[in-house]
Length: 289
Image (cartoon, rainbow, N blue to C red; front, top):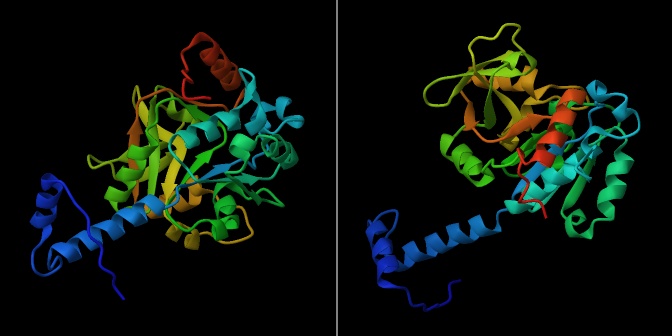
């Protein structure tokens, strides 16, 4: 059942609607306007979901992580995880899923006391470490649309998540991997990509530098829920070593190049460097409330 609805539009917008009327897909002005309103409402109502992988043991940061989970290590007085959540808020992420495991009670306690951001958080608990892919599978019941995934030990200051989502949608791929350029890629997963930013393969932690600079996996992804069907349940599965290489062979993984500040916080030296970068202004966190 349809109801009559009258509205006044400016002439420029009306002209753009008229340009779409083709007599077949867009039969007339009213049908075209109705379809455009439906698309617009769906876009406005679509939730933005992010999942942060927080379940790792943080072995490279020991002894710091014997008593504190890696995502909760303080940087200039705030946990690393709080910087990430505040960044997601900047881009209107409605649902933030924390895939927790090791020392998870500290994470839950901290954010349960933060009413300004705690209400956005949903928890996915791991009884045993499941690695990056297993953590996604464990949270599959919470993931309906394309979602952002990020490792809990990365930090950046100017990654445009809106453009990242647009790039992913336009690519038609199942996965978009954020890439950063580094001088020494031996610690990371090196991405091989063509001129269309299609990732053709990965070299996991290459021993020798293939070039002065190389594009590496930044630990930030947009992932289609279709990928979850490739992951076996209740076992350790690595996105980087098992899932992404298979999808790259099927030409379903794209790389989004990012040139701003980025750092891994996986070792003690990395942790010290990031703390120093914030204090000296190299890492700018003006978006942090």
